[in-house]
Image (tube, rainbow, N blue to C red; front, side, top):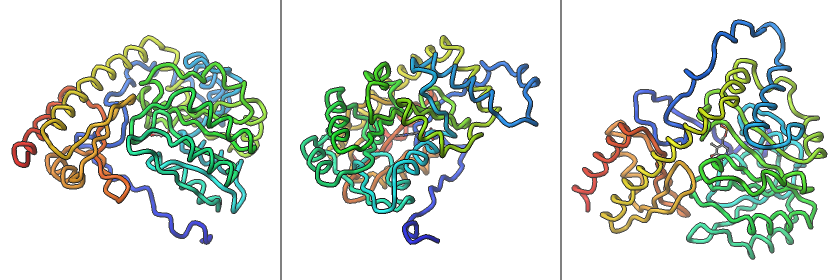
Length: 353
Ligand SMILES: *Cc1c(COP(=O)(O)O)cnc(C)c1O
Protein backbone atom coordinates (compact mmCIF):
# COMPACT_ATOMS: atom_id res chain seq x y z
CA UNK A 1 0.00 0.00 0.00
CA UNK A 2 1.33 3.43 -0.94
CA UNK A 3 2.37 5.66 1.93
CA UNK A 4 0.09 8.50 0.91
CA UNK A 5 -3.07 6.42 1.25
CA UNK A 6 -2.37 4.61 4.48
CA UNK A 7 -4.52 6.91 6.61
CA UNK A 8 -7.60 6.71 4.38
CA UNK A 9 -10.71 4.89 5.60
CA UNK A 10 -13.57 3.32 3.58
CA UNK A 11 -16.64 5.44 2.81
CA UNK A 12 -19.01 3.07 4.59
CA UNK A 13 -22.75 3.26 4.13
CA UNK A 14 -24.94 0.72 5.89
CA UNK A 15 -27.79 -0.25 3.56
CA UNK A 16 -30.97 0.35 5.56
CA UNK A 17 -33.88 0.21 3.21
CA UNK A 18 -36.50 -0.10 5.93
CA UNK A 19 -35.68 3.31 7.40
CA UNK A 20 -36.77 6.86 6.66
CA UNK A 21 -33.61 7.93 4.88
CA UNK A 22 -32.99 11.64 5.20
CA UNK A 23 -29.21 11.37 5.45
CA UNK A 24 -27.82 11.38 1.90
CA UNK A 25 -29.56 14.23 0.04
CA UNK A 26 -30.93 11.85 -2.57
CA UNK A 27 -34.36 12.50 -4.10
CA UNK A 28 -37.21 10.95 -2.10
CA UNK A 29 -38.95 9.43 -5.11
CA UNK A 30 -38.01 7.33 -8.12
CA UNK A 31 -38.97 8.38 -11.65
CA UNK A 32 -38.25 4.98 -13.13
CA UNK A 33 -41.91 4.41 -14.08
CA UNK A 34 -41.57 7.30 -16.56
CA UNK A 35 -38.87 5.43 -18.51
CA UNK A 36 -39.85 3.29 -21.49
CA UNK A 37 -38.58 -0.22 -20.90
CA UNK A 38 -39.61 -1.55 -24.27
CA UNK A 39 -36.41 0.09 -25.57
CA UNK A 40 -34.41 -2.03 -23.19
CA UNK A 41 -35.12 -5.09 -25.34
CA UNK A 42 -33.29 -3.49 -28.27
CA UNK A 43 -30.23 -2.75 -26.17
CA UNK A 44 -27.14 -4.66 -27.18
CA UNK A 45 -25.65 -5.81 -23.92
CA UNK A 46 -23.02 -7.85 -25.77
CA UNK A 47 -21.46 -4.62 -27.13
CA UNK A 48 -19.42 -2.04 -25.25
CA UNK A 49 -21.38 1.11 -24.43
CA UNK A 50 -20.09 3.78 -26.81
CA UNK A 51 -23.25 4.90 -28.58
CA UNK A 52 -25.41 4.91 -25.44
CA UNK A 53 -23.07 7.23 -23.62
CA UNK A 54 -22.93 9.63 -26.61
CA UNK A 55 -26.71 9.76 -26.62
CA UNK A 56 -26.77 10.41 -22.91
CA UNK A 57 -24.40 13.35 -23.32
CA UNK A 58 -26.54 14.70 -26.14
CA UNK A 59 -29.70 14.46 -24.01
CA UNK A 60 -28.01 16.06 -21.01
CA UNK A 61 -26.59 18.90 -23.12
CA UNK A 62 -30.06 19.73 -24.36
CA UNK A 63 -31.64 19.38 -20.94
CA UNK A 64 -29.09 21.42 -19.01
CA UNK A 65 -28.03 23.92 -21.68
CA UNK A 66 -24.35 23.03 -22.00
CA UNK A 67 -22.46 22.63 -25.32
CA UNK A 68 -22.58 18.95 -26.24
CA UNK A 69 -18.96 18.71 -27.32
CA UNK A 70 -17.73 19.95 -23.96
CA UNK A 71 -19.30 17.34 -21.68
CA UNK A 72 -17.60 14.23 -20.33
CA UNK A 73 -19.89 11.70 -18.67
CA UNK A 74 -18.79 9.90 -15.52
CA UNK A 75 -19.80 7.00 -13.34
CA UNK A 76 -21.22 9.54 -10.92
CA UNK A 77 -19.43 12.82 -10.35
CA UNK A 78 -17.36 10.89 -7.83
CA UNK A 79 -15.49 9.32 -10.74
CA UNK A 80 -15.03 12.72 -12.37
CA UNK A 81 -13.50 14.15 -9.18
CA UNK A 82 -11.06 11.27 -9.29
CA UNK A 83 -10.27 11.85 -12.99
CA UNK A 84 -9.69 15.57 -12.46
CA UNK A 85 -7.29 14.73 -9.64
CA UNK A 86 -5.42 12.25 -11.84
CA UNK A 87 -5.27 14.82 -14.62
CA UNK A 88 -3.98 17.74 -12.58
CA UNK A 89 -1.98 16.42 -9.63
CA UNK A 90 1.58 15.20 -9.27
CA UNK A 91 2.75 14.04 -5.82
CA UNK A 92 3.42 17.07 -3.62
CA UNK A 93 1.20 19.43 -5.63
CA UNK A 94 -0.99 21.79 -3.64
CA UNK A 95 -4.78 21.58 -3.47
CA UNK A 96 -7.20 23.91 -1.66
CA UNK A 97 -10.56 22.80 -0.28
CA UNK A 98 -12.95 24.33 2.22
CA UNK A 99 -14.06 23.15 5.63
CA UNK A 100 -16.84 22.13 5.71
CA UNK A 101 -17.33 20.92 2.14
CA UNK A 102 -17.75 17.61 0.25
CA UNK A 103 -15.16 15.17 1.61
CA UNK A 104 -14.35 13.47 -1.71
CA UNK A 105 -12.20 16.39 -2.92
CA UNK A 106 -9.67 15.98 -0.14
CA UNK A 107 -9.73 12.21 -0.39
CA UNK A 108 -8.97 12.16 -4.12
CA UNK A 109 -6.24 14.75 -3.73
CA UNK A 110 -4.62 12.68 -0.98
CA UNK A 111 -4.82 9.55 -3.15
CA UNK A 112 -2.68 11.40 -5.71
CA UNK A 113 -0.17 12.31 -3.00
CA UNK A 114 -1.06 16.00 -3.07
CA UNK A 115 -0.76 18.44 -0.16
CA UNK A 116 -4.22 19.58 0.90
CA UNK A 117 -4.89 22.92 2.56
CA UNK A 118 -8.31 23.18 4.19
CA UNK A 119 -9.62 26.69 4.56
CA UNK A 120 -12.23 27.13 7.27
CA UNK A 121 -15.35 28.93 6.05
CA UNK A 122 -16.47 31.97 8.08
CA UNK A 123 -18.72 31.30 11.10
CA UNK A 124 -21.80 32.03 8.99
CA UNK A 125 -20.39 29.75 6.26
CA UNK A 126 -19.66 32.58 3.85
CA UNK A 127 -16.38 32.44 1.90
CA UNK A 128 -13.36 34.09 3.55
CA UNK A 129 -12.36 35.59 0.20
CA UNK A 130 -9.27 37.51 1.33
CA UNK A 131 -7.88 34.47 3.14
CA UNK A 132 -8.52 32.29 0.08
CA UNK A 133 -6.84 34.72 -2.27
CA UNK A 134 -3.76 35.00 -0.14
CA UNK A 135 -3.55 31.20 0.26
CA UNK A 136 -3.87 30.84 -3.52
CA UNK A 137 -1.02 33.29 -4.08
CA UNK A 138 1.17 31.69 -1.47
CA UNK A 139 0.56 28.00 -2.22
CA UNK A 140 -0.11 28.13 -5.94
CA UNK A 141 -2.52 25.16 -5.86
CA UNK A 142 -3.08 23.13 -9.04
CA UNK A 143 -6.72 22.64 -8.02
CA UNK A 144 -9.27 24.44 -5.89
CA UNK A 145 -12.44 22.41 -5.31
CA UNK A 146 -15.71 23.77 -4.00
CA UNK A 147 -19.37 22.85 -4.05
CA UNK A 148 -21.86 25.60 -4.85
CA UNK A 149 -24.38 25.44 -3.26
CA UNK A 150 -22.23 23.97 -0.52
CA UNK A 151 -22.75 20.52 0.93
CA UNK A 152 -23.21 20.40 3.94
CA UNK A 153 -23.95 24.07 4.67
CA UNK A 154 -26.62 24.59 1.98
CA UNK A 155 -25.21 28.01 1.24
CA UNK A 156 -25.07 29.49 -2.28
CA UNK A 157 -22.05 31.67 -3.08
CA UNK A 158 -22.50 34.63 -5.40
CA UNK A 159 -21.40 34.83 -9.01
CA UNK A 160 -19.01 37.66 -8.09
CA UNK A 161 -17.32 35.53 -5.42
CA UNK A 162 -16.85 32.60 -7.77
CA UNK A 163 -15.52 34.96 -10.45
CA UNK A 164 -12.92 36.23 -7.99
CA UNK A 165 -11.81 32.70 -7.20
CA UNK A 166 -11.59 31.77 -10.88
CA UNK A 167 -9.50 34.88 -11.56
CA UNK A 168 -7.17 34.21 -8.63
CA UNK A 169 -6.66 30.61 -9.75
CA UNK A 170 -6.14 31.71 -13.34
CA UNK A 171 -3.31 34.03 -12.29
CA UNK A 172 -1.29 31.17 -10.85
CA UNK A 173 -2.26 28.72 -13.62
CA UNK A 174 -4.52 26.54 -11.46
CA UNK A 175 -7.95 25.05 -12.15
CA UNK A 176 -11.13 25.83 -10.24
CA UNK A 177 -13.53 22.88 -9.92
CA UNK A 178 -17.05 24.15 -9.35
CA UNK A 179 -19.25 21.29 -8.18
CA UNK A 180 -22.86 22.26 -8.87
CA UNK A 181 -24.45 19.05 -7.58
CA UNK A 182 -27.31 21.02 -5.97
CA UNK A 183 -27.57 23.93 -8.41
CA UNK A 184 -30.91 22.71 -9.81
CA UNK A 185 -32.52 23.57 -6.46
CA UNK A 186 -31.01 27.06 -6.43
CA UNK A 187 -31.93 28.11 -9.98
CA UNK A 188 -29.89 28.75 -13.11
CA UNK A 189 -26.12 28.78 -12.71
CA UNK A 190 -24.55 32.01 -14.01
CA UNK A 191 -21.76 29.84 -15.47
CA UNK A 192 -23.85 27.50 -17.61
CA UNK A 193 -23.59 29.60 -20.77
CA UNK A 194 -20.11 30.88 -20.04
CA UNK A 195 -18.04 27.85 -19.11
CA UNK A 196 -16.12 27.96 -22.43
CA UNK A 197 -14.99 31.53 -21.77
CA UNK A 198 -12.66 30.38 -19.01
CA UNK A 199 -9.22 28.82 -19.35
CA UNK A 200 -9.41 27.16 -15.98
CA UNK A 201 -12.99 26.36 -14.98
CA UNK A 202 -14.44 22.86 -14.65
CA UNK A 203 -18.12 22.50 -13.77
CA UNK A 204 -19.44 19.26 -12.27
CA UNK A 205 -23.08 18.22 -12.41
CA UNK A 206 -24.83 15.05 -11.33
CA UNK A 207 -28.08 13.19 -11.95
CA UNK A 208 -27.98 11.95 -8.35
CA UNK A 209 -29.82 14.75 -6.57
CA UNK A 210 -32.57 16.89 -8.16
CA UNK A 211 -32.88 14.49 -11.11
CA UNK A 212 -33.46 11.55 -8.78
CA UNK A 213 -31.09 9.00 -10.36
CA UNK A 214 -28.45 8.33 -7.72
CA UNK A 215 -28.52 4.59 -8.37
CA UNK A 216 -27.70 5.05 -12.06
CA UNK A 217 -24.38 6.78 -11.23
CA UNK A 218 -24.43 9.55 -13.82
CA UNK A 219 -22.19 12.58 -13.47
CA UNK A 220 -21.13 15.24 -15.99
CA UNK A 221 -17.99 17.31 -16.37
CA UNK A 222 -18.20 20.49 -18.43
CA UNK A 223 -15.15 22.52 -19.47
CA UNK A 224 -13.38 24.08 -22.46
CA UNK A 225 -11.96 21.97 -25.32
CA UNK A 226 -8.43 21.79 -23.96
CA UNK A 227 -9.49 20.53 -20.51
CA UNK A 228 -12.04 18.09 -21.93
CA UNK A 229 -9.49 16.67 -24.39
CA UNK A 230 -6.88 16.37 -21.67
CA UNK A 231 -9.15 14.60 -19.23
CA UNK A 232 -10.49 12.38 -22.04
CA UNK A 233 -6.97 10.95 -22.33
CA UNK A 234 -7.21 9.36 -18.90
CA UNK A 235 -10.93 8.55 -18.84
CA UNK A 236 -11.75 4.83 -18.97
CA UNK A 237 -13.46 4.37 -22.35
CA UNK A 238 -16.67 2.68 -21.16
CA UNK A 239 -17.20 4.28 -17.79
CA UNK A 240 -20.97 4.77 -18.16
CA UNK A 241 -22.90 1.53 -18.60
CA UNK A 242 -25.54 1.07 -21.27
CA UNK A 243 -28.49 0.45 -18.92
CA UNK A 244 -27.82 3.61 -16.89
CA UNK A 245 -27.23 5.65 -20.03
CA UNK A 246 -30.43 4.41 -21.62
CA UNK A 247 -32.65 5.15 -18.62
CA UNK A 248 -30.91 8.47 -17.99
CA UNK A 249 -31.33 9.51 -21.64
CA UNK A 250 -35.03 8.71 -21.59
CA UNK A 251 -35.68 10.70 -18.45
CA UNK A 252 -33.61 13.65 -19.61
CA UNK A 253 -35.60 13.73 -22.83
CA UNK A 254 -38.70 14.18 -20.66
CA UNK A 255 -37.91 17.69 -19.47
CA UNK A 256 -41.55 18.15 -18.37
CA UNK A 257 -41.35 15.14 -16.01
CA UNK A 258 -38.11 16.41 -14.51
CA UNK A 259 -39.45 19.97 -14.16
CA UNK A 260 -42.57 18.68 -12.39
CA UNK A 261 -40.40 16.61 -10.14
CA UNK A 262 -38.26 19.61 -9.27
CA UNK A 263 -41.40 21.58 -8.30
CA UNK A 264 -42.55 18.72 -6.07
CA UNK A 265 -39.13 18.63 -4.42
CA UNK A 266 -39.20 22.40 -3.86
CA UNK A 267 -42.56 22.02 -2.07
CA UNK A 268 -41.12 19.33 0.16
CA UNK A 269 -38.06 21.46 0.85
CA UNK A 270 -40.35 24.29 1.99
CA UNK A 271 -42.21 21.85 4.25
CA UNK A 272 -38.96 20.59 5.75
CA UNK A 273 -37.88 24.16 6.38
CA UNK A 274 -41.06 24.76 8.39
CA UNK A 275 -40.53 21.62 10.44
CA UNK A 276 -36.94 22.48 11.19
CA UNK A 277 -37.56 26.18 11.94
CA UNK A 278 -40.28 25.19 14.40
CA UNK A 279 -37.86 22.77 16.05
CA UNK A 280 -34.94 25.22 16.11
CA UNK A 281 -37.19 27.87 17.67
CA UNK A 282 -37.93 25.56 20.60
CA UNK A 283 -34.37 24.47 21.28
CA UNK A 284 -32.26 27.26 22.67
CA UNK A 285 -28.87 26.09 21.48
CA UNK A 286 -29.99 25.17 17.94
CA UNK A 287 -29.47 27.36 14.89
CA UNK A 288 -30.92 26.62 11.47
CA UNK A 289 -28.97 27.86 8.46
CA UNK A 290 -30.74 29.06 5.31
CA UNK A 291 -30.44 26.61 2.41
CA UNK A 292 -30.43 26.72 -1.39
CA UNK A 293 -30.50 22.92 -1.57
CA UNK A 294 -32.71 19.94 -0.70
CA UNK A 295 -31.28 19.67 2.82
CA UNK A 296 -30.90 21.83 5.90
CA UNK A 297 -28.01 22.13 8.29
CA UNK A 298 -28.82 22.89 11.90
CA UNK A 299 -26.04 23.77 14.30
CA UNK A 300 -26.65 21.84 17.48
CA UNK A 301 -24.25 20.83 20.25
CA UNK A 302 -26.25 17.65 20.87
CA UNK A 303 -26.18 16.59 17.22
CA UNK A 304 -24.99 13.06 17.87
CA UNK A 305 -27.60 12.51 20.57
CA UNK A 306 -30.40 13.77 18.35
CA UNK A 307 -29.22 11.58 15.46
CA UNK A 308 -29.18 8.54 17.77
CA UNK A 309 -32.62 9.39 19.11
CA UNK A 310 -34.02 9.64 15.58
CA UNK A 311 -32.23 6.45 14.59
CA UNK A 312 -34.14 4.62 17.33
CA UNK A 313 -37.31 5.91 15.65
CA UNK A 314 -36.08 4.46 12.33
CA UNK A 315 -35.18 7.90 10.92
CA UNK A 316 -31.70 8.29 9.53
CA UNK A 317 -30.09 11.72 9.35
CA UNK A 318 -26.50 12.88 8.98
CA UNK A 319 -24.67 14.40 11.92
CA UNK A 320 -21.33 16.14 12.31
CA UNK A 321 -19.65 15.97 15.65
CA UNK A 322 -16.11 17.26 15.57
CA UNK A 323 -14.33 20.39 16.76
CA UNK A 324 -15.13 22.42 13.69
CA UNK A 325 -18.78 21.44 13.27
CA UNK A 326 -21.50 20.13 15.53
CA UNK A 327 -24.65 19.94 13.48
CA UNK A 328 -27.30 17.76 11.94
CA UNK A 329 -28.05 17.68 8.23
CA UNK A 330 -31.50 16.54 7.15
CA UNK A 331 -32.65 16.02 3.55
CA UNK A 332 -36.17 16.59 2.26
CA UNK A 333 -38.46 13.54 2.18
CA UNK A 334 -42.04 12.66 1.32
CA UNK A 335 -45.03 14.02 3.28
CA UNK A 336 -45.23 10.76 5.25
CA UNK A 337 -41.52 10.85 6.02
CA UNK A 338 -41.87 14.45 7.18
CA UNK A 339 -44.77 13.44 9.43
CA UNK A 340 -42.55 10.86 11.13
CA UNK A 341 -39.75 13.40 11.45
CA UNK A 342 -42.07 16.08 12.86
CA UNK A 343 -43.49 13.68 15.46
CA UNK A 344 -40.03 12.52 16.53
CA UNK A 345 -38.68 16.08 16.80
CA UNK A 346 -41.72 17.11 18.87
CA UNK A 347 -41.07 14.23 21.20
CA UNK A 348 -37.47 15.34 21.60
CA UNK A 349 -38.47 18.95 22.34
CA UNK A 350 -40.98 17.84 24.94
CA UNK A 351 -38.26 15.87 26.67
CA UNK A 352 -35.48 18.41 26.46
CA UNK A 353 -36.72 21.91 25.66
C1 LIG B 1 -24.06 14.12 -3.78
C2 LIG B 1 -22.93 14.95 -4.26
C3 LIG B 1 -22.30 14.64 -5.45
C4 LIG B 1 -22.83 13.54 -6.32
O1 LIG B 1 -21.98 12.53 -6.54
P1 LIG B 1 -22.37 11.39 -7.58
O2 LIG B 1 -21.14 10.60 -7.60
O3 LIG B 1 -22.66 12.07 -8.89
O4 LIG B 1 -23.58 10.68 -7.05
C5 LIG B 1 -21.26 15.44 -5.89
N1 LIG B 1 -20.88 16.52 -5.18
C6 LIG B 1 -21.49 16.85 -4.04
C7 LIG B 1 -21.08 18.09 -3.31
C8 LIG B 1 -22.52 16.07 -3.53
O5 LIG B 1 -23.11 16.39 -2.37
